[in-house]
Image (tube, rainbow, N blue to C red; front, side, top):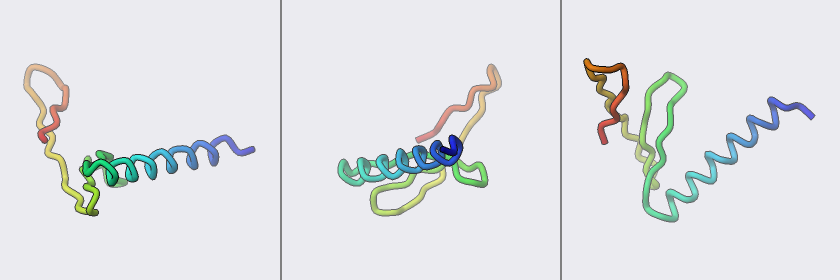
Length: 65
């Protein structure tokens, strides 16, 4: 068995399950796109970018919902 292929399939199935759960509960999922942008995807298919703000006191990203 190809470990990388199996892992990729498991990750895809996890994302698919998250979408189904979001649709069933009327919520959204959050993920990072291929170009590095963090977005919310709602159950109706609408995708909204999330703005990230960095603080001066630390290098921690604060997600602004």
